[in-house]
Image (tube, rainbow, N blue to C red; front, side):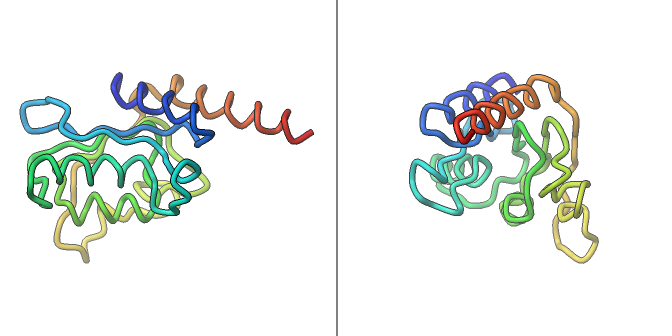
Length: 147
């Protein structure tokens, strides 16, 4: 989670919501990195998880990420949860739940849907306070700027 938080902080430099993600290989080494790049790249799919999964798959030369772990600072949305399932990651680890858009247990539970052909293990609540603090501070500053 340390490395995902580094990526989340880096997103602040581009005005993006501070969410970061990393993909760990089966040995626990960082294979892919991502941070929100929606604002920086004007890309609606520029979520940290998708960026990290693309990076890992590109480095590996294989879209299947069996045995890998996706670590993200906030519960993934439906797009990102779906990407994790399609990439065949073994495990999804995240910080706080996202009550507004979460799809790994909050609003939906895409990754555990029995109708899908792959269901990763889920570990929730890792370093939630730290990740939540980054988000709270970001949105408080944004509200101040808009006032």
